[in-house]
Image 1 (tube, rainbow, N blue to C red):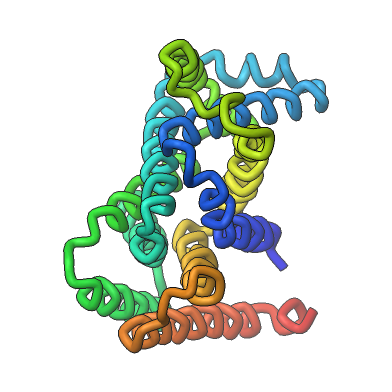
Image 2 (cartoon, rainbow, N blue to C red; image 1 turned 60 degrees about the horizontal axis):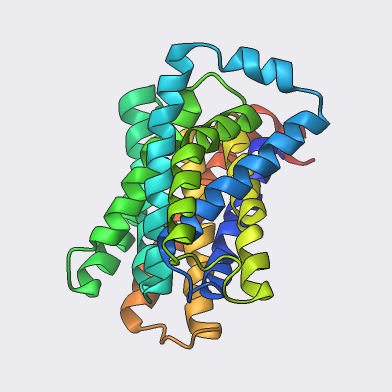
Length: 296
C-alpha cells in the first residue's frame, strides 16, 4: 500500500479520537490550551531534530525569507484552526466540528483541481457529487449557517494546500510553523501567569500533565498528515479525512450519548457510499493498469 495512504489513515485516526483528549481539559481556557500546544509541540520537534543530528540542516533549510513567509502563512492557518477546534469541542459543538471535517475533503478536492491542476475521472466526480450531497443534507438539517464548520474546513484546506506545495519536509515545516508561533505563545503564557489567569501549575498535576501532552497529540498526527500530503494527491488526502469526523460522530453517540438522528444517518450514508465508489474506482483503475500489483 502507498505509504502516503498509511500516513494519512494514521493521522486521521488520531484526530478522530482527539476530542476525548480536549474534553479532559474543558476546565482550561481554549486559548491557554492552544499556547501549550504550540510550546510543547515545538520543544518535542526540536528534540527530534537534535536527536537525529539535523540542526544544521534545519537552519540551512529555513534560511530563506521566502520560506519563512510561506510557513508564516501556514502557521496562521494552523493556529487559527487549532484555537477554534479546541473552543468548539469544549463548548459542546462537536457536531459542528465533525461537519467541518466532512466539508473539508470537498475543499481539498476544490483546491486540488483549481490550484494544482489535479484531474478527476468521471466516477470520481460521481463520488464527489454524492459526498457533496451528503454534506449539503447535513448542513441543511443542522438548520443554521455552520460558521464553525466552514471556518475549520477552509482554514485546514488552505493549510493542506500550502503543505502540498511548500519546499520543506514534514518535520522541518512543522517545527518552523510552531517556532514562528512560539514567541507570541510564550509571551501570552507569561502574561497569564503574572496576571494570575494561568491554569498550568495552578490546578492539579493531572491537568499539568495533560497540557504537557498536547505537544505529542498535536505534533504526531500533523507530522503524519504532512508526510501524506507530499506523497498522494490532495483529493485523496481529502477523502481520507472522512475517517476523523466519522469517528467523532461515533464518539458523540457512544461516549457522549448524543442521538444519531435520521438526518445524520442519511448524510453519513451518502458520504460513505461516495467513499466506496471513490476507492472502488481507484482499485479498478490500478488493477487494469497493473494486474499483478493489484493482487499483492
